[in-house]
Image (cartoon, rainbow, N blue to C red; front, side, top):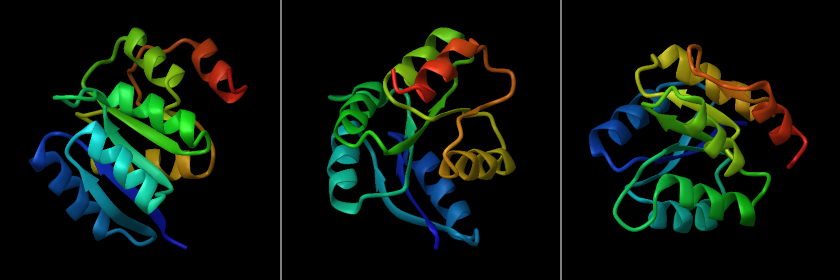
Length: 145
């Protein structure tokens, strides 16, 4: 069974590039694309993807962080991978507190994207190499705090 993926990023070029790549991968299915947090929430409710790959900061009305909080509060089992350009542990901690199960840097390559998707799909937590993270962030998320 394919991993059903929703892409959410305010940059059309990023969404389209990710979508085109993922559509070529066996076992991956892009079920929708959102340009903002509001659209992402609507599509999650309609499509019930397995994984959401979501930009951390999406204007104008609802940021990626706010959308992630709403999605994860409504569907706690939803697996969200945050996309960000920030490596600092403060950003990582905020994303995990909001319910993300993965944190990936935007300068990562496609191989890392596939690794992140598969890792999170299997129920584990993924954090890009080089990202500052405290062990307590992952541990508290795994315990459902």
